[in-house]
Length: 398
Ligand code: JHZ
Image (spheres, rainbow, N blue to C red):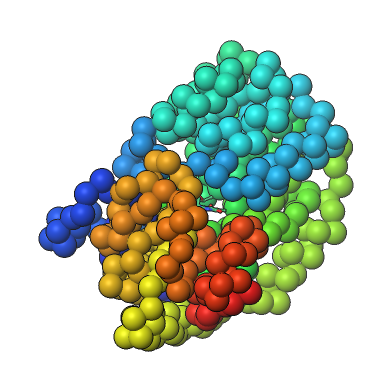
């Protein structure tokens, strides 16, 4: 049975940064109810209302993985691992974004799939075979005809963005070599609950995976997880290494049992933990508003850092507008001079000078806290402070 446990209200499309300020009545037309559910059979956590893929992933998709040093170094490290462990003759990435990972691979043996045409253009220009399509069985058959089977398939922060998971895995098993390996990487549900990072839920994140759910999900495709890596990226992610059951090249590593036990001990297989999470989320909202209101009445200048998709959830759920957060700064060129979805808060292209008279910075990109705090040492040194809502709303000064 599928049970709703969290209501994050009406939300705009998380990455739909607007060119102009919009009247509230216009904004209302573009809102979608954001509720999160738990399926106590499959143990899958998903959002209830799914928005069409064409609305979310099109030729104006602004997010670029290469904007963070943390992600670039994580991908570089993964490339070395893949080459060393699996020596792929053919490598396929689903959701290759702006090529942050793929640029480490050989152009002749790599296939990119990226449905956002503006991003697909980038890897194509870099010289990689790029297919500007959504990942499904049709595309997989087309690619198999042209290239044959592939040894390694990789997808980071992509599979959880596709509604029809059966089609996703059918398409994967169709093209994956008998001895091939599938690697998927997505935010960890366990970390999301532990950190009360409710902003991992937005329309693009149709699912937030646990190892338990992934194990159940892939069973019917005769696939199994043989290794799991815990990553620090995106607030705590899991990298699953998956093979066909009959492939004996790899033994199931202890990491798989360890992760599943951790999740069971926490209670991810039962509804109760999600109900508790929903209470923590409400408390987080109350505390965040209290902190920001307090700074507002004391005439402090507060801005946001990292105009993330996650911030869209926070701003709209907590009803935070430009009275509380003056503007956002972000390094992504395609977000510059636009407005945060649903809230008319302006985004400026990051420039350190914009911080000169700022008292407090709300960490929209809290998942890059270490990278950002290191970069903004001067701001901290002169008494500037950061605000984070993860794992609970608080002010941080170093
Ligand atoms: P970041 C996106 O989510 C959308 P977002 C998507 N659905 C997903 O799953 C994840 O990515 C992977 C900026 N920044 O990675 C760059 C700075 O300005 O948390 C980005 O706009 N200065 C595909 O948007 C944003 O912050 C910096 O120093 O929640 C980070 O976005 C750094 C480090 C980042 O993902």
